[in-house]
Image 1 (cartoon, rainbow, N blue to C red):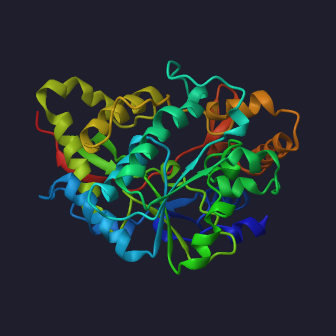
Image 2: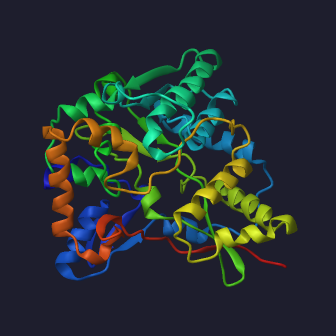
Length: 386
């Protein structure tokens, strides 16, 4: 199983795990090691930087200005920037932070299971996660059409990840690349080594794979607002760089290079929930809070606070409730059960279920369905004054 681990990016700023004396950037590797040794993993997410950050003072710059600073920071750091765009609020705001400030972004890639969903109805009247493939038509395409006019020199790439998914060139060790998300589509959806991107890797010394990760996690505990990070969100990108040593994954928002932007977001969110008219909504932040419906409501509210340029009428389906047999890959389970790809996916799931202690799984009814989350330290934003 070591080959694919060697192909994964070892980037401390994306988070890493310590199991006793063993360090790994891969959650599944950490959980297997924990199962073997009985030692609990500890997740580190830029603790040194964020531990020294001044969280209780709101930066004076506006959020738009801070977004522009972050975009410039990335532009000055890399020769070539590839934004992974879904059409959702996180990646769209990342794109606007560049284009609306006259900061060039080299390429935008949208990954869509075109052939795999070609026999399914596209509709903007169904909001269940099973209809997530329709976001291509109603969320991604409108942004791409806008981009063609706003930044005509930005390259637009559409990658049909269902093609490589259905003709697999991988084995059950794909699970290491999935990290937290072990649904079928993750195997090829964020694979960096796709043909469309090879020229960029070969011609540029420093290439950035950029993701719009993520909205701040805010909790109320001990009479104050706190911010924390969750490894499940930080593990979204696959970061499988394979033989390339010039690719770096960057998270636009969750970066140790510019914590002031996260501080500003946290204060704006805390200020909003501190308004008397919103007092009853504070229950959405009470800790502990792992209810998916409350988290979904929280994220809908937060988008309107921290993403001022995003069009909130944009079509978006509900978040999936499963990390393994997820609703967003319902097209795969419907159309491709009797395929080699399905067998390899199932073997990978069985591998983690067999080799990882039951305590590290979340359960959906009686089935193992996703891994438990690890959280960062809590960073205090401000006291609650009723």
